[in-house]
Image 1: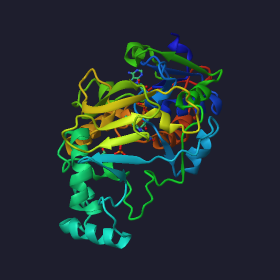
Image 2: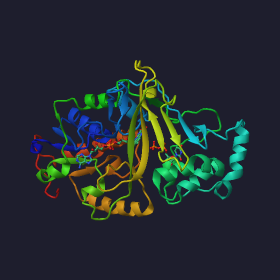
Image 3: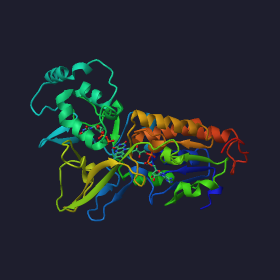
Image 4: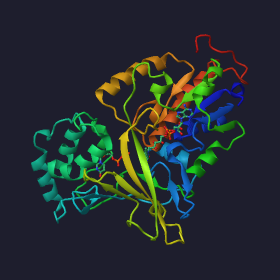
Length: 392
Ligand code: FAD
Ligand code: UDP
């Protein structure tokens, strides 16, 4: 692999890396190399056809696109059409199925009555600014619904005391007092008509872009020169060889099953809140594309299990306790001294980013950092400019 021939080296072919590469190659004319240690593009958004059922599955769990950003929405629609899919989630608890979110008391309540019941239960958290996940959840939905739908699920998902988890984790869960059961409230939502991987193929299809799969950045890092810019979207603690400590991550395992039925659970995602059920949710992918005709009376499901990420595991969710944030701050301080490396994406910025946020951050990064790096004369290869001496 001729890494020397490129202006820009993008580590990671997920949404952050692919967006930077696409913009840099197309708009800035930079010779760009995208490397990923996995054998495929698309990062965690990767989708593929299950050979036994013909159903398009998401190898790393169901991904639903949603955003309020016109910039991100307009950008992504250059590479795909979106269907009018609207995500609905159901949570199983105590043998019943509740739609998530709703003021789900399992009986008929008017919006006013639901508000009153919840207000009675928010107790000492009413009107305060929640400082952790438990306070936020109880302040939003009251103790009964917290115990029923959130406590057990959160325990399985994070295995961390909810009082030490950041409140933002469940900010994404809307609280409504109506029977609007859509999971997301964003202006734009949908599934890419031809799947996620097709988006990445189109984004990365450019003469200035070369994609190298199955390559670990740390095997080629010593060949990178200071006049080349690196956009790194792997885990930030790994980049610095864990010298400030290991950040806390959760990983997930998926158990794939094929069932001889056209429809296993009647919807794309069912969460399981009971602590004694070991998995957190079941994905049934064919429901993500109701517009498609899947002829076989067969279906693929994934059961999702959450656990702490060991050093050999894929990190998925940043845990973000106070201790993690202190470690992350130390890495940020080291990162600012690496003048030819940009850290981005979910792993590189240690943030629980959704796809639209990763894309939005990447677009901003191109304007704020990538373009100025080359405009200032730091970038060397093919630009006829000399490297900045302090870059390393
Ligand atoms: P990634 O997609 O993780 O890409 C990073 C890439 O870097 C990976 O491919 C990795 O192999 C590569 N890499 C890392 N280290 C190296 C190295 N040393 N050398 C070479 N390559 C390296 N978002 C939504 O908007 N909607 C959803 O419904 C949704 N559901 C999700 C469900 C699950 C189970 C998970 C885990 C995430 C979900 N997300 C969802 C979040 C979404 O996956 C992320 O926002 C998105 O993947 C972030 O893109 P990224 O480029 O930052 O990271
Ligand atoms: N959550 C919960 N019960 C549910 C769904 C979500 O307790 O049925 C909480 C849980 O703490 C979870 C968080 O809300 O980690 C965010 O859930 P979501 O499914 O939106 O996150 P994802 O795993 O898809 O990123």
